[in-house]
Image (cartoon, rainbow, N blue to C red; front, side, top):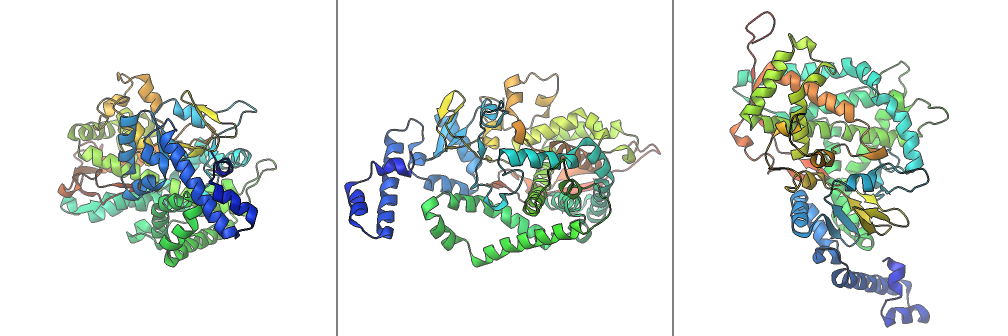
Amino acid sequence: MDIFDLLGSSPYFVKQALSTGASVSLIATALILSCAAVSSTYNVLAHPLRPKLFAASRIPYSLMVLSGQSHKRILALHLKYGRIVRIAPDELSFLDEAAWEDIMGHRKRGEGENGKDPEFFKTISHSVIASGREDHSRMRRILSHGFSTRSMLDQQPLITQYVDLLLLRLQQNCQDGTATVDMTAWYNWTTFDIIGDLAFGEPFGCLETTSYHPWVQLIFERIRGASRNVMMRKHRWLSPLLQRLFITAEAKERFMGHLKITKEKVAQRLEYKGQRHDFMESMIRKDGNSVLSMPEIVDNASILIIAGSETTATALSAATYFLGSSPDALHRITEEIRSSFSSEDEINLLSVQRLEFMQAVINETLRLYPPVPTSIPRIIQPGGDSICGRYVPEGTTVGIWQWALYHNPNTFTDPETFQPDRWLQDSSMPDEARKTFQPFHVGPRNCIGKNLAYAEMRLILARILWSFDLRLADDCVHWVDRSETYSLWKKPALPVHLTPRKMTSPSGRS
């Protein structure tokens, strides 16, 4: 039901105002309030989906988002009301393995797709992640060159130099295990330096200075403010007032500062005339007659910085916490790494692929603490669509909240426990659970950087566990419970004791 449908149900005084020449502002106000009242009444009394409170208004959903604990609330709603839950008057959440393909899967030629929510991606509307179907195909074809296996191998020396620097800095700061190092910060510094060099031809200098570059701070603020800003835009007619009240001039200035620096970094990289095996090289190349415009280059560079750094660092932080909290798993993965290589030089992007238990640890980490715990919403296509066997009207926002999906006890046994064994080949985990696990999404818009992300996580974790014995500090307790979600995670510090490994033989085996 949209505003035009509601006009037919509006009270008599609104229709009279339209015919008697009342002021436009008065008519608009009366119409909006009338429509809101009728819509809320319909949603509460007649709509079949629950909970009714969330159906009546976006206010409960907004408060849930602002709490930082929306992921837990969404799971609780599903466990109470079922696999399809109405979380706002025009938004549905699905807790069903079939929803992946129904919402995001490949479509036959001539069939429409459920596009990305434009309000969610408003500030990066020219990026591959936010684009329409045709633009997405064109951009993805161009960007894919930078994420191919060949490109990843070409990028390996660049990635390795920052991992080397990470290990050096940890050696310098761990004080033989007597001091703690905040691995949340160290992983962020490493992944931001890597992606900065791959996207712009120069790092942020975080590992050199052992501190956050001012621009990285701006990026964090942008991530954390994104869910709040989207929430305000979703209130539509209230949006201008909410933004005027809650988005300060300082926040606007920081956003413009981020955009300004992004454009400057892109311009500097484009001035480079030599050949570099980085993402910008793929962005500026022609693919037949297809090229990226300057706004597309800027927005794609911006999204690559966030998607290629924060999410990887989050997974590494969580893996470190779960391993430190699980002595048996930590012992097994450490032994696997140290028995698989004769020297640290053998550990590279390709060789770490054969570490079976390592991959199981990463998968279990991505299940328990998915880097994108919330949903990346889609809008149902014109004419509506069938999702999980239910007709959903066009224009409805739909999404899959990964944290809730992976913590569903109806799909995963003991969903709150860290059990890497469930991902091993001889595991008894049912196929339904394996298909439910889609941390990089599905369909034509799945994550283009999936292989690079896995490779980086395996390489960094393997190098650290090769070189150090790891022990969580006492104040790491409940690290996961102290995390908050605002589109992505707001992670606490992760203090860890790293004791340099003592080598006992020339072969490097201990």
